[in-house]
Length: 143
Image 1 (cartoon, helix red, strand yellow):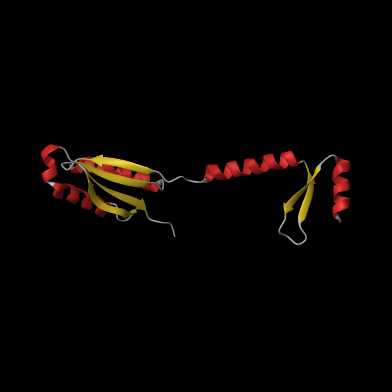
Image 2 (cartoon, one colour):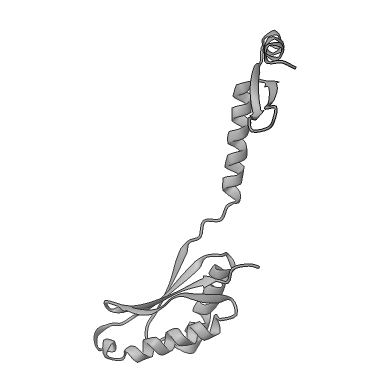
């Protein structure tokens, strides 16, 4: 129908003429309450926003002399974070004279990398920053 007819019907019903698909040929319009239409659109966007996952960076701190059982517990927690599609930052903190034994920290991070290889990939390899050495792991992308 023509524009004038549609506007006349909308005015007669006490509603608005809302353009639904402007890029269609001819454009699609609907007679409805515009306020309600905007409310429904906002509601849909809010629902979509809820479903999106925001990737967080979780941190797990260790010392160069962290024992094997403690490491297993920390790796278990890291697995949980990675399964939730978050990134994990492993930090090895050095205190005092421990700084002279950086190779302990490198060995520890290599061990972490080997044990997490099937679930995660290294996004940022081991790097020293001040008294801390860190490495960032990211979950494998789904195929």
